[in-house]
Length: 152
Image 1 (cartoon, one colour):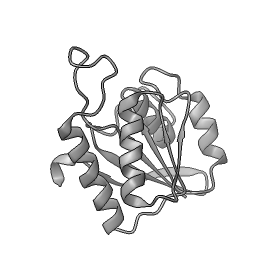
Image 2 (image 1 turned 90 degrees about the vertical axis):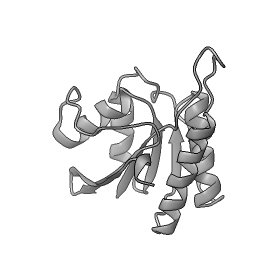
Image 3 (image 1 turned 90 degrees about the horizontal axis):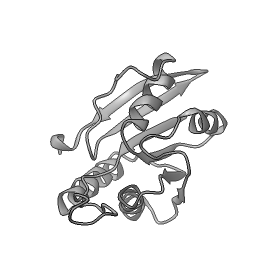
Image 4 (image 1 turned 120 degrees about the vertical axis):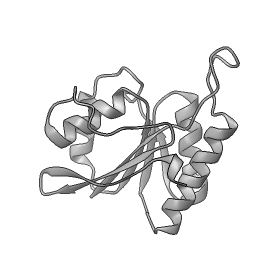
């Protein structure tokens, strides 16, 4: 099984819009990411995203490009400063490949906890619009690959 941790695309500043939707660059980066995933035959069962608008928009773009049959769900516990315990437990029950769209520092902590058992190490250099693929072998998670939007 694989999980894909995606940091939402670049958002506008709070001064422009307090809900912080994706900027045009953020939308473009996520469209490029989605096309990369599709071109490489990445298929997922579902996309989970936080309650924040920029994460919802990121998830929607991914679904639009990958497949309209992909289920998209808003999930509590994926906001920037939420504890990772709840999502970590949910991941242990997953059986299908899943994309999780979230924020820093939450994604960084989750990734670190899954890989080395400690959440406070910054193992993956997430950037807005980046993705890391984690693969589960038996009970262990490992990094399969990482892509940053500046590579597109």
